[in-house]
Length: 224
Image (tube, rainbow, N blue to C red; front, side, top):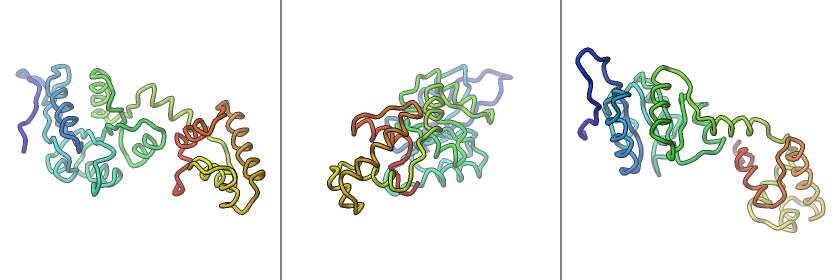
């Protein structure tokens, strides 16, 4: 067990918040732990700083900062959130990902907040305090990303197939061949996709723009 990182707490002050930091990158988790433990405005003690959800749960945290991707062989984020919730911890996801599918999936499995790893110290402390109260925390930027992604084009199955194949890097001829249609028909499907994006105020002209928007909307995930 590493040394506990704690902020000074005066006599008669509330008990410090018990926080766990779970990340597979030592530099990141130690940095977060040091920041949390050095802030007198948020009296807190880091009861766990490591990469194991199971060990973090055993430490009995009130708030757990959880990386959404703990590397190969790690616990899936949904199982991680559930394991932490079972010991009464409220989960704040801290991630390098900032796309709508990542944020949405974290919230859907029970996380109370989501912050990017580039977040400021002030915003991080606000997020921890908010989640500790049992309230939802999202930055203005992430809330805007979710709001924009909430309105996605309603694509037909064939339009979606064409989009995924084209976004994977295939040329129109190859897209048509894979779908059993002519390149001209494949282009028509992609043109319809672009029109539907334009109709919701999100124009996509190039393949790169189309890929970026579709990926942000979770349309390229065949399991979605």
